[in-house]
Image 1 (spheres, rainbow, N blue to C red):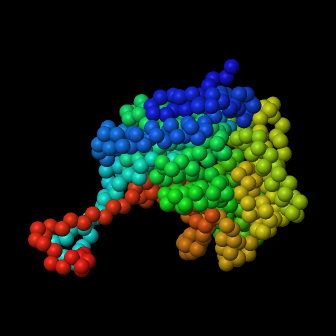
Image 2 (cartoon, rainbow, N blue to C red; image 1 turned 45 degrees about the vertical axis):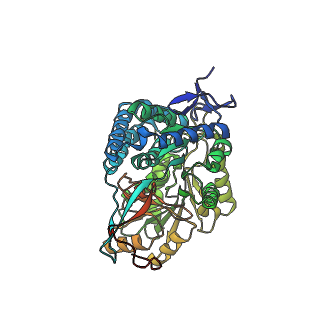
Image 3 (spheres, helix red, strand yellow; image 1 turned 90 degrees about the horizontal axis):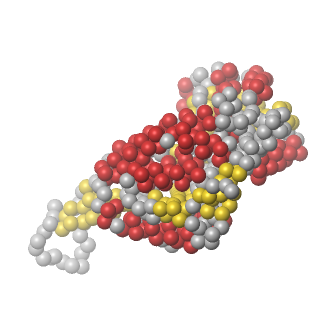
Length: 493
């Protein structure tokens, strides 16, 4: 019988109220890894109650910002100590390369260290008044219980991106991980408990999105929802949170352009294209899936990208030599295949790949796919595929490619390859994207804020600005005049 994983609520593991579990499988081998508790509204209510009790408790309320920083640093240390274990768990769960996960786990403690340093740097300000007897100042306070719903493609990194500023600001959390990647988030909650967080500060309810996730979004005890996932689900969450007048941070989909100009180092740009859309099997919201190449370098870029795609070693993600693992689950594989079919039916040419590779493993593997003869108005260039599929299109002028790049509902990221500094600045200022990379792709830091434009999201992840996402601003007035009010019918200020 497979190992059973239970919820983590109020500092301890709890069986699901329904007694039901669901299986999680290894996408490379199709073997059952474990069974996770199938949470429902009753489990979510218990977790929110635990988080509310912790938020209101003396032990957490009296924790100073500096002490919260110490706790975050301790949690970062523990993640570093368990990096190999966590990297392996995540690779088994979602098929990402173990060596990629080792790299992520080496840098992940830095997220917690960064917010540990920010915990006691969130300040208010004194506001000038028109009366010398009046003092007005502001302070930032924690919101309360934050609900975090995190995806399967980078569960630890994207959960820590929410958890770190939320805890630094003094909130408590209920986390609902993707049903495809429960183990590492449960382990994160255990490590938070080991680090010294009081019972109920970090809670995890596992389960299906339509059940546990929906129940968390609907729970009236939340002060905020932080969600990373599809634009459609994000829009539904935004409508619900708006109706209750609570906040939401939404990191949603993308269809990012990766633009190669005629003066670019084409060899470097080709590797940037590969990194932008084939790394992590294309299962990233920032994937540079729309590749625009100046007509003078189009053939060379296509040749280089095709050669590198053909040489990518596909196989067991636990092996160091593997460069492309499986897609995370069967439905995702079928979705990606269906988009390749849609593209060819719309008139695109499947230039390379898009087939199952000839390997011994039975999992959800797919060759990287390169589509040519596409136009920006095809579905494959308008809708997020979330797989290793790139469409390469020629352009002639800067004005033309800027229009094409911005002609999308999304605005998450963009890449520009050029040696012309003036052009790089023009493009970065005129692209409708929250992150623009020049002569690189997929660079990221906890210090650098990330925001999606248009349908790619609301709110900010990472950086100092993200601390404000998890606080509320209070204005306080003090009258230092001990005498009676001269005229009670006149507003003072």
